[in-house]
Image 1 (cartoon, rainbow, N blue to C red):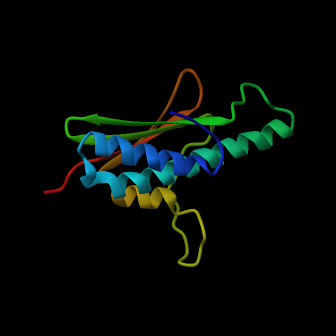
Image 2 (image 1 turned 30 degrees about the horizontal axis):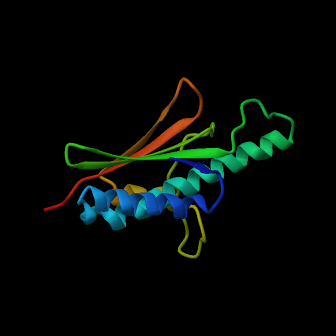
Length: 135
C-alpha cells in the first residue's frame, strides 16, 4: 500500500494490519503487528521529511513524498515491510525515560523475532520485521 509521507500514514498502516490479519485468521499477532507497523511507518515518515528538508535546500532529485507498506505471511510468520527513500540506515537508540521519541526501533527490536533493512537498486530502503506465534 502506498501512503503519503505524513503522520496520518501510521493510522492507515495499522488499519491495514488489523484487516489483513483478521482476513488471514492470524489475530494472535494484531497488537504486535500494529505497534511494529506504527513505529516503522513513523521512522519512514521522518526519513522522508528529512529528504523534504534537503529538497528545500536545493537537492530535489528523485524526491517522492510517499512511503510504501507491506504485510505478508510466510511459513506461519508475519512479515512487515516499510519502504522510504531515506538515505540513512535505521539505528536503535537508547533513550532516557522522559524522552518523547527516539525509541521506536528499540520497541521493534523488543517485539519482533527479527528485523533489519536492505537497500534497493531502485532507490531507498526497506525496513522489515518478522513476528511468529509463540506457543
